[in-house]
Length: 257
Image 1 (cartoon, rainbow, N blue to C red):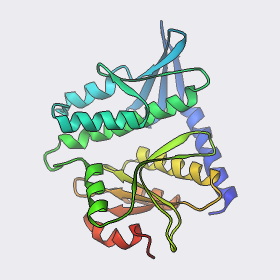
Image 2 (cartoon, one colour; image 1 turned 135 degrees about the horizontal axis):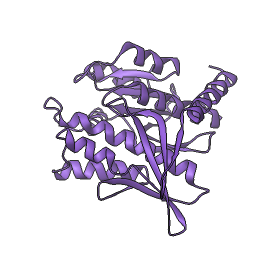
Image 3 (cartoon, rainbow, N blue to C red; image 1 turned 60 degrees about the horizontal axis):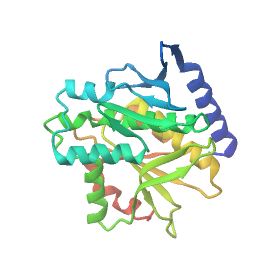
Image 4 (cartoon, rainbow, N blue to C red; image 1 turned 180 degrees about the vertical axis):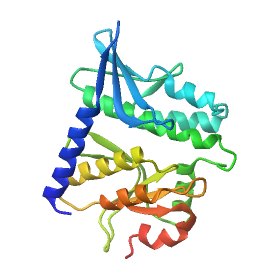
């Protein structure tokens, strides 16, 4: 894919994002409805209010309350630790039941991007409430990489041309046969996280002089991914790897052809 193609894709994405953002003025805050959907296919909403001279962005507690309503409780130390790690990775925090972050006016675009990514990541934790999911998928992927001596960096951040920083689950070093690569673990492949990952990859590639490889390892044991969503990843040169066939991906992840 040539540079002009990537630029056109990014321009189209940003145009779509701007058109689909809906702003509603409330009594003491603004409500931003985004084009990204939760697991109910409802628009994810962010609330912005002024607080002590800065801006406070929050989901108003919806994400955590919705998970708890579906019997997804953060009762174990493992789940609490994972929730804290997810939020910390995006630079946001939990205040009561609210996912929130403070921001200056200048930092608002990046902070809005961070909290939206955090909400999507936490929303994806719903699959933990299902009986056939016995452990956290990202943790399973990390153990798989370690057990096969695949060199990887956790919570790998890269900057994009848009000015946003993007956090990937794992970074894989450059080898003699492969460029530097990123690996994202996805519990449940949806249109929203496929689109979000495609934008992140395209944005980073536009900013880097060197090539960047990209993989998405998908948990297909709980719910088989849609061929449409897999094709969407491939269209943006993100290689989908199925968890049920993970052993076949070992040479690729080790940087061999």
